[in-house]
Image 1 (cartoon, rainbow, N blue to C red):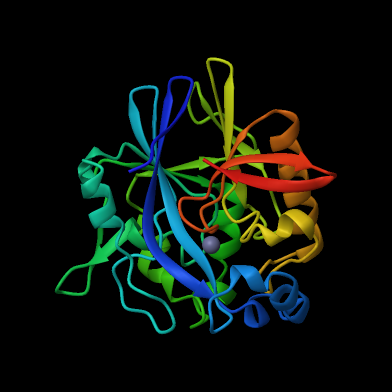
Image 2 (image 1 turned 135 degrees about the horizontal axis):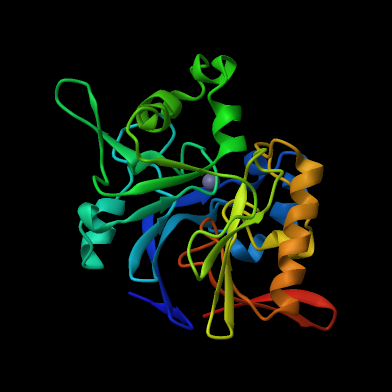
Amino acid sequence: MQIVTIGNVQITPIQDTSILMNPRQFMPEHGEAFATEYAHLADERGLMPMSITCFLVRSAGKNVLIDTGLGARRRPGFPEGKLDKALAAAGIAPGDIDIVVHTHLHIDHTGWNTVDEPDGSKRIFFPNAQFYIQQVEWDYWMQPKFMENPAHPHLADTVEPLTNSGKIRFSRGEEAIDENLVFVHAPGHTPGHVAIGIQSAGEKAIIIGDASHHPVQLDHPDWSPAFDADPSVSAKTRDRLFENAIAEERTFIAGHWDYPGMGRIVRVGGKRVFQAL
Ligand SMILES: [Zn+2]
């Protein structure tokens, strides 16, 4: 298991599941160009590897989990998550997680917040965790038009059960999470989407959430997937995060890039290039 050290902070990738992506479905507007230009990244069926990776961050004496994957439920069109086993392999029990930080509240980022009990009730999977959630993001998804929409079943299963648990800490904008971790404004994918900045002992990293889904966006930051809420804002956000990672030599960590999605972005011959760790 690969562990990245940023000053006094340790980051361990925790893969919930790998996925295969069809570029024509993923970015319908640019699917043909994507499939043609980047054919070398595809398998014989034209599918490209992606991941649903969460990150265990050991910081300031606490175990912080960034996002919680797809979860244990069987959902049409999605594989079943294995984050529980990946955490156990890292020596971590659910009760060891002190803080869960959500970059946003999509189905593949909140899954393990709860598990289903035999009686149908939802049990919070991390019994000792506080859940850090941006207020803007919470208010957006808790609107009845989303809660009542069958396209978003995870809201009732994995988000709403936190409501009266006393375990949510609502955050506003670029607040500090602890002495090393800070929320970074990164809107576009969803209205309250945030990245997580890490700075310790002179070293820096950023966990970008869903500001980018694939390294093809290093060349084409304006290629936004269909499910970005505001594709023009998300394009500006990802371009800014790429450039900031280069300028500040930040370790760049992307949970949907091929596992483990950790490395450096450098400029080679005028092009942005990802160098995996
Ligand atoms: Zn996602």
